[in-house]
Image (cartoon, rainbow, N blue to C red; front, side):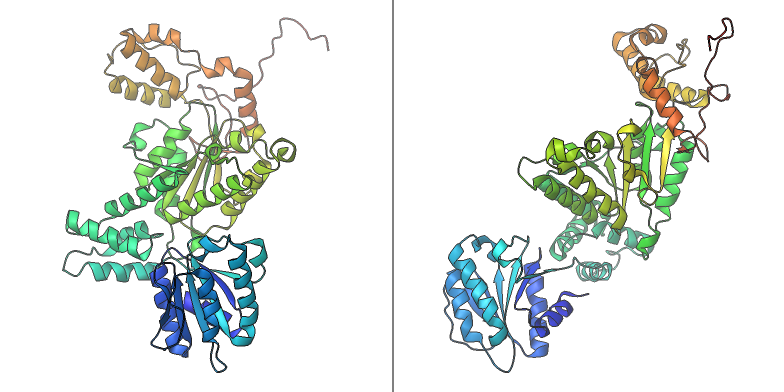
Length: 499
């Protein structure tokens, strides 16, 4: 619903206190002016710089001063018996800390039902004092739609060939979603200056500046694609197919994301980064621990703000690494942190369940026992993938890749890699290059996590059997060793059991 349509309903229903949350004040005022002209309503606007100004051509004797208290009192001159009068207060949230101004505004809003005077506060944030919460209704000024962005692009690209067509134009519009009208116009103009045609690169650059201002999420830029990852064939095919077949028109048909569960060092984080390059989507890295604030309510506000930024950056990949470490205390959160973790989990779960934006969530987890069970239920993720130690063919690919990367002798003997992960194979190759040692000797400095944390690794594998999808082959995960035989507990028969 358009902003003007929503306001018409509220004014006719005698709502005299309206708070509009908007980042585009000029566009919001233009829409309100057009609405007032159509219905022949009176309109005035106040800000600290220009004072109280009448809009729309009507002449009234009003105080032109910049004092906010005087502006509220001067609104009495707009009272009319035959038609509503609207007063716009721009960025008025800055003055509501004054008890005198707050009380005067509350009185005028209460009397506005008789005088048919409507007060509209136009602000980029909603900061209502407790005394005004019940008398204001909050309305959000929506960001430009896909069609509006197309019209802005057509208005900027006036020459032939400056505006792409077909799938390339759809990619440009995808990248511009979440920008304000002014930001979109600036991004399109910058792209024309650089490339003489509108391309998504300049648009993403402008969006990246938004992330720097917030400090809540980081934009990852890398050149790794799927060719840099050995194995994980089923995971690659599953995610790439779901992302490349995203339905732009129906939000219900959009993919949600995947939860990557597995042994540390098996490529969970590397896969998330490579997926962005492979599908042409930016990767937003969300550190939930960094969202913790020292003030009451600050953490929850940071989480909501970070998720809003992700929505504005659509289509994108939102990457949360080791999610269980940030949310593991949600069960006992009331005793440990006054409920902050549980409220943060609730905000994240609501977002995962209800958001309709084209944001693909990838979360990694090393310890499923610390994961809140409600996070893994159906429809939170498209699938839960288990990443086990790489098999023989996958290890050969990983060895070849890192031997070439670190410029080692490809003909030299390789060490026993029975328990090595991809990260540990890379470590062997890096140490061999750094210390100028053969691979076999360099491997003596690497102790596999499957040895140091054998019990945890085996427990994780046993939990994943029949519960997770296999990252290597289609279907449910079934733990196997490198020969393909199912892993079973080894029992010696040399000495009978006492039982």
